Image: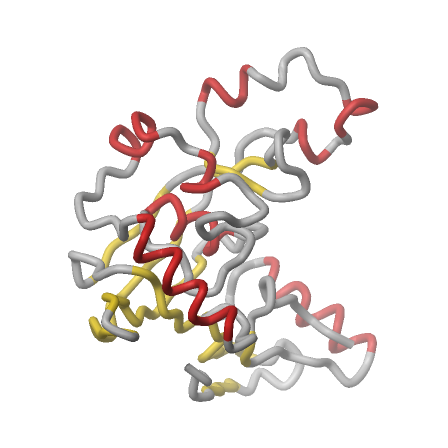
Length: 219
């Protein structure tokens, strides 16, 4: 049985358990966040700093369910007159603390457009966290047709330009043309989004043996 999940169209490593006891014990390891998991992604634009944290709470998007958006006080107030019968219980859940760590591997060019290869760690492991954080940061994952530009979810993590400048100022944001052309290039080749579960390390809860796995990204 599968012990944990991967994000939307994410390639890479996933842990499978051989029996029910292993599933139960390994689920506990993941819930307690005693697993070191890292992703590699190719994102639009050149990220200015070599490393950093994106610390923005997320909430279910009442305008574009079942996706998520960055939570703000205004958007929380928008839920006041809604009921679970109207929109479902998950929409009405409170904001979730969400932290993503990024480290720049290299700054590259793809068909003449600036891209950055990054290592990502989802410290809090929220639903769609990495995708919506990078979109709000101004460096969406290339090929992300949900949270990227013109995706199914709201652009920029659901934030207005004023909210972006206040919550996550970034003068190096990839412009709309760069984002569009990079996505068109990936979609034309029918490639999945450029995000890969590259590395995982954990201690087996039964044998107490430490396991470590890594695999190269396909992009």
